[in-house]
Length: 444
Image (cartoon, rainbow, N blue to C red; front, side, top):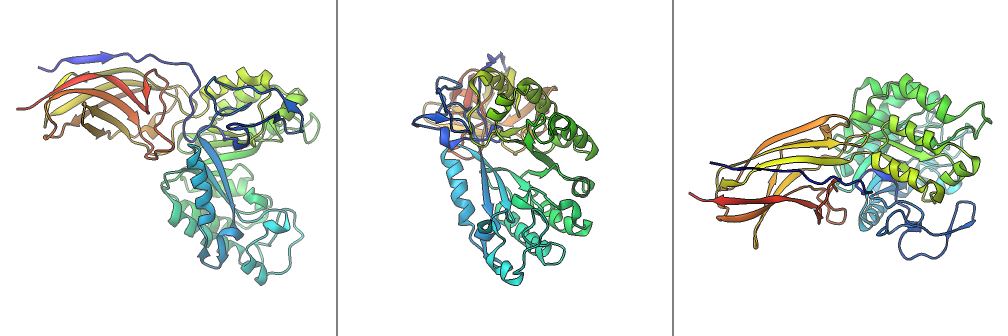
């Protein structure tokens, strides 16, 4: 008769860094660096968020922002130098990060132009702000859609990419002028993303009602990003701000209030956090709004967090994205080779968003000389916050497993050694796995 063992793991309240969530990494503040300066060039005292942090005046991170220019990748029509992106993905991996990727069609400077071969077809630049080529009178829409299709064929499901920006038009692909495009032009580009990226999550700029309407009408899994988080009145005095007059209204108006359930919500700082501090803006208000909107990650543009806001930011990080607590774990302490191991567990996601990448939940059976990995059928992307997550599953034990005592461990694997496993908010992390106890395997 099987004996059930129940374990109550010790939940921790400390900061943990996980793939795809938290602050975007700040390489300039990492490692053995000299003095630290704010965005205005003023020297600041060094500090760390945790004793073992590798980053100064900024949280550690496991997500990195990779941006590449169209002209650098598609050097001739349908001729691609993907190594431009590969180098950046390799760098992200080398610092233990997944990557948010953006391919930009062009930007404002001449060196950020459209590809040379495309410019040769259209030597004149339009006078329209934020456009370097007129998508209404050139083949921009077809060419950019073709590029996105090739991009998706190459990179959908890439293990280092946590999500991809859906860029349509405008400087850096940030949407300037999108509202002046015709619906069929926007659909041509968005369809290239939505049809091509079926595994890797997407997020679109929360920019204008037409492009967002086209995206939401397809009812695909697309999150959103905003690029002026924190603005409490920096454009038009105190009469208008992104935080009170644009984001709250348009998240609802554009029907994106539930997008977070299936795809990520990303924010980028308006100016820099140090500017918020010097303006005297309410950091707790800004943080609480992002949590209400189910933030997964925040791009601070690699600059410092003002030290007086350290504790505010630590509490923010504990809620940002997903955070998994394993509260109860029951299993059979004796099983037979060729038989079943029954598991029952209670989980909680105490963050504000799910995980969006399909990482496997695994059990490991370890003896002194052998390890067996059992893969769960559970889809952890469905673990929404504020819901009890009851997990029950029966695992088949291979018939050739030798008799003896094994240590039972649990983990969530990313499949990338440099990035490592998902950290749980419980004690006992050993190389990304958590020991639940011992079990005896018998034969016959």
